[in-house]
Image: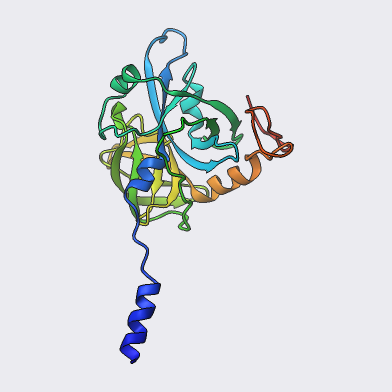
Length: 244
């Protein structure tokens, strides 16, 4: 009898298993032509993470601020069955991206909140924010060396207030804005910078979960009235907010 009760409890309280596709579908590729003087025409690419869906269907994406600062007209690409490792140039040539609007730029950290309207049959997921301030291990999803939707394992090296450093041998340029996911597939940070240590090689700086939460809490806009229907239906809190 007791065994039957325990079995029933187990059947009604299954252990959640992380869905390996969810972080991939929550990750978008952010890219476009470079706008810096003397470098016009160069394709640049980074990544971003879908963190919310507005009532009118518009998706909000967290990315690194410097990714969108360096692109003249940034576009986002959702995963449409693209094979991981597809060159971004191939993606750029094969289909148009979705134009995005920059909603808010963090004044004190390399983060930006952008928005785009998906098409009717786009397949995507909304990332779940984790609980670990700086996970010991997990995966970075981004576009290292312009190879889109690549999953790279990492291990934690050091943590400080608001940021942490990870060792990720297969990460590289193009992972900026990429999501750092813990072992449960929850978003735990955003890659913002690569640094090279003569002793250990390439390391990557990550904006920690606490900074992500405070940025979203402070700068996620509120509706003016009713259901949001236009990109300019936003209000901004007072303070050092840069919006464009």
